Amino acid sequence: MAEIVLTEQNFEAEVLNAAQPVLVDFWATWCGPCRMLAPVLEELAAEYEGRVTVGKVNVDEQPALAAQFGIQSIPTVMLFKDGKMVDMLVGFRPKAQWEQLLETL
Image (cartoon, rainbow, N blue to C red):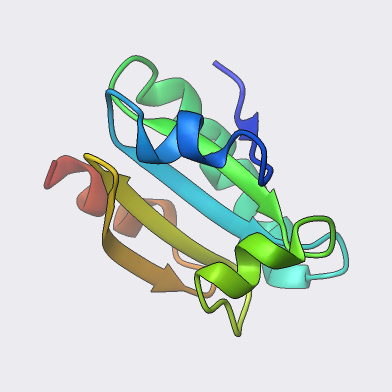
């Protein structure tokens, strides 16, 4: 499954009302660490298909969402479960750290 593009219009339906956990990546095209993280999250989206959804919020295109969640540094990845943010990691992390986070679910 490909990552989903999250906007103000679909965030509630795709994240807050989601049946399964959602990793939300707040990123921007000009951000080097964001570009490094992108293939890791793509792999996780494929490996955890059916168990975890991976969504992306472009902070330049969705500034209201970035402000709503207090994003000050990117990449910031938030893990939502049952409509609530349960964990957050800021900056690039190796794939093993993301897998460890997801396995706690």
